[in-house]
Amino acid sequence: MFDVICITNRKLCKDDFLKRLSNISKSNVSKIILREKDLTEEEYFNLAEKALKISSEFNKEIILHNYLSVAKSMSQTKIHLPLNILKSCKNITKDFISVGTSVHNISELKLAENLGADYVFAGHIFKTNCKKDLEPRGVEFLQNICDNSNVPVYAIGGINLNTISKLKSINSKNFKGICIMSEFMTCVDPVSFVNEILNKLNH
Image 1 (cartoon, rainbow, N blue to C red):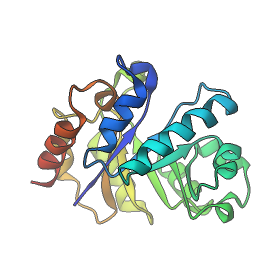
Image 2: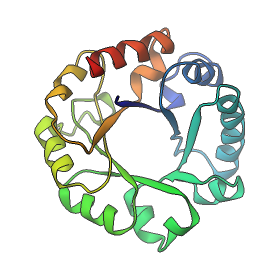
Image 3: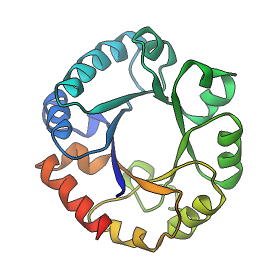
Image 4: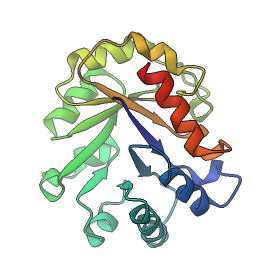
């Protein structure tokens, strides 16, 4: 059974962001990464407080992103960090039960592992509007990352109902799931969307 992870981006959301977060939390999504890097620490704290309250109502896990001091002040035991922040904060993995990061090549993967990352997001796999000027790395790249990884790997970038079937060719015990941003922020019904994704991914 593969994991489906939601990456937030409230700027893509046309309706109320917190209401959408509530609807996503009702779905079979594995976890939610609260990725809102443009906010001040105070703004992120306030948003995280609301998001964590919503997630707790539905027993859904939300992982904070980027803001170390906020995560610590809220006694969060898990965090997802950009690789440069993970690299600059020595021994940060001692402060959290789980630390994840994102990688784009094998050297970054090995650096992440050496820094104590418990899992990695690898991408971007397919063409995405978030990175219009960058060529996607493709399925072969993902297979290569999985083959060389000692930690769980999650695919990210351009993954949707049309592209997800291409990931079925990945043959690795390290390939654990996918991350989706845009469609989670724009789909009509997150519950149905996740069920469709899981159906395509697991069958």
